[in-house]
Length: 246
Image 1 (tube, rainbow, N blue to C red):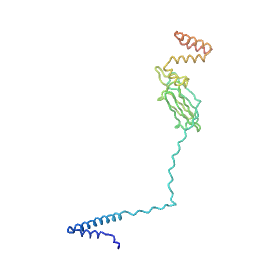
Image 2: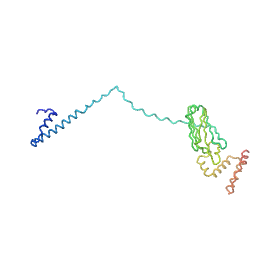
Image 3: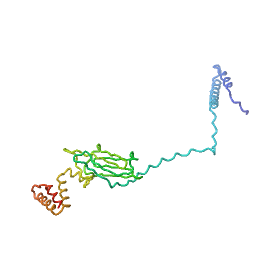
């Protein structure tokens, strides 16, 4: 059987011209079927011709330099190791003064003024100073009294740092400081505030333990009176002073 040529739009037009209502039903249906099939075929061929030809895959270029993967983020800098500051000068200020001062020798620190930091809290401060290529630190977290962080500051000079600790004002005056840190820990300080009598007893015991025989006798008599129910009169401070001079 010879191969039929590919159908064209002219063939479709010729088939459509054959359609007529006067044709017998079978013949008319056969022609309509061929028209529909030819319309579909020509439409598919037209759509295929309209699609762009696929570009051939590019061959790899051996000379092409591939992008290197992104570098990993730099590792965080290690936390500096601090050298504890053990020597400093303390000026507790005059009676009813508003602040006490801590003096820290730091040769050349004025050249690195912006790097000095000091954090203040109610019962502590944390000073960090670069000295001679190393970081130094002064931390005190058991101050004798609370401080006012809002009124505390530090001053950087050429060869030293001055930490100004704002005192807290009581009912009549600012706290009287005798030393920078308390002999008791924070919990004991809190308990002393809540129970003043316990604080007095602790002070008397400390004076007894550190005093001479005459002082121990005076304090012992006062303590015996207290335990027996008698009114405990505090020892006269002038007498106590005389006893310490013996």
